[in-house]
Amino acid sequence: MIYLTQGVKQLQYTQSSGNEWQHLVQSVMHPRVISKIQDEIDTFKKDEAPYVIYGTSTCLDRGTSEITGRIILFIDVDDNGKDYDKEAYHIDAVLSSLNIKHVIYPTINNSIKPGERLRVGIPLDNELAPEEYSKVWQVLTYHLHLNADYSGATRAFKQLQGIYVKTTQNAQNEPIIENNGTALNTAFFLSKYEKLNMESSKQNLPKPAMNSNAPKWAMNNRKIIRALLAPEEHYNAFGGWDNMLTSIGGWVFKNTKGDINLTADVVQDTNNRGTAPISEQELTKKFKSWMQHWHY
Image (cartoon, rainbow, N blue to C red):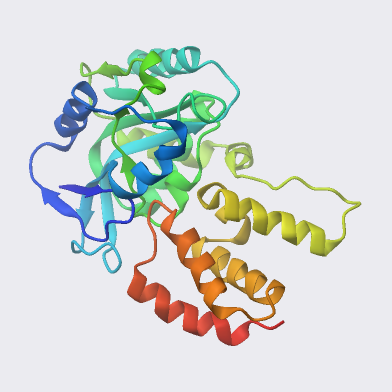
């Protein structure tokens, strides 16, 4: 099934039928075209950008639904410091040699943020549950030698994927569409999982910069500030999205002498910048529980 949203703040999916792979191919072939300057991109992503999940959801409310399976695998490659075209052609060459269908397209941040920023979409021959999806993702990115966004395989399974949007910034990099071949053989890639040196694949996990000379409070402040600037890139350092939000809340509460209104605003704004934010109703419940443990 196809579940669409317009902007990451939208809390309801729009359900669509049809072939998931062909829907993705058509969205890449006929993208929305916009002219956006850098300062407008974040607002566009929140309110207008098209997002999708291909798989099975328990309901259409994003706050209460669970995604139980995915039929298209996505890989986000961000900020490797490499050339976009060389990276895209490398991925294309490997997948084509394996006769696997795929699309590769620049994300909306490509040519705005540093490094190549691209998304790979691959059809699966069977819909995969979270654990199996993660295993296939790890095997594939390991053999492609990609420094990919690990949250795409480990975070809440309901994480949205941005559909291709052509902008004045990313238009210099053309998408690649390979519609010949077959869907990825999930059984084959799952069989390779146990043979992997998983310590090698864990190199994709984001790790905060360490400085043994800095006091613990300074290291914690750096960790919080990184999360405030880019929550999607640093929530793993806290052990999860919820843990990050409550850590940020406690930090703001302490450093503002108990300004609960400002704390709530910061937590809500940080949550809203996630690709799978906690629903407002659920966040309110969690916030009331979290604040019982905050002190200043």
